[in-house]
Length: 316
Image (cartoon, rainbow, N blue to C red; front, side, top):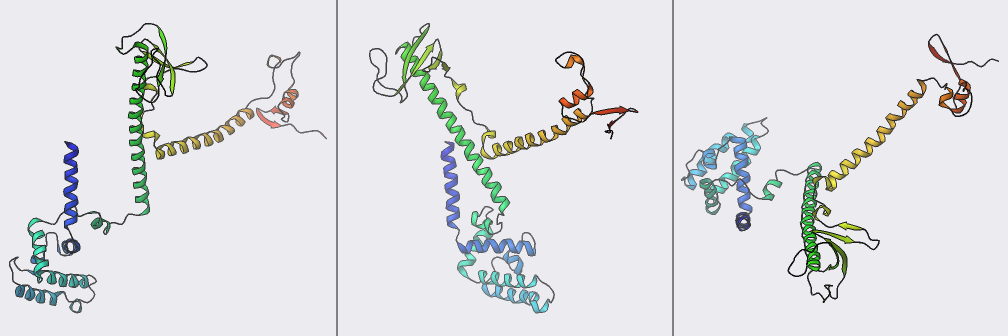
């Protein structure tokens, strides 16, 4: 019911768009331009200061009067006056033509539609590169997510069919549960006929084990893997390509700079402690001298004086 209503709604919108021709769009443009320049709610008639029932001669007279006021020669330095003067000429031409005036009167009485098709809005808003990229990212990610949902529902249904086929092969047509484990073969191509031993006839099949309500896939090495809804990959926004790409870049940067920051810490820890060790810290007999500890770490010997650490000076 909802789908039918939505279809009829879209169809009515399409019919409305198809009913508007080029002249209608010109009237829409003119109405919007006049309201912008002359004030909200200004109509063709109110701009000319004539009633909607005015005759053609009355409209022509009102046009001549207003055109003298808006003529560019009488308004030097006004950059917008030329546009208003040209717009006034178009309004006069529409109202003095019977067919175009009838068309305008329809929108004058019923109102100009707010939604006028993609072409009308595109002429006023040309999307930039950033807008297009964001739109494509959202669109492609949404399509990918709905494909995930479709695949999830399909795989879930297939798992349920396989489980039902395995139980049917193990328990029989009446689906009476049998205690213990029973190995069966399940057809991967769907329902079909079985032989006297319960094996599917003439199709590719897999070996499975039914143990109570649980169903397992039996591999050649004897391992069994459970078959249930948890094996189906559920749809997630994080698995769409853009989110996955951002997360991958974030973790890569985190690992890269995390290791770079950790290296100086290790070096400072080496510099902050004496390299001498005791006999309990090295294997072998006796105690290790500071020089021996330094040689083992491939570092120059150091001495302490005055509470400060400094490098030893080699005697000449």
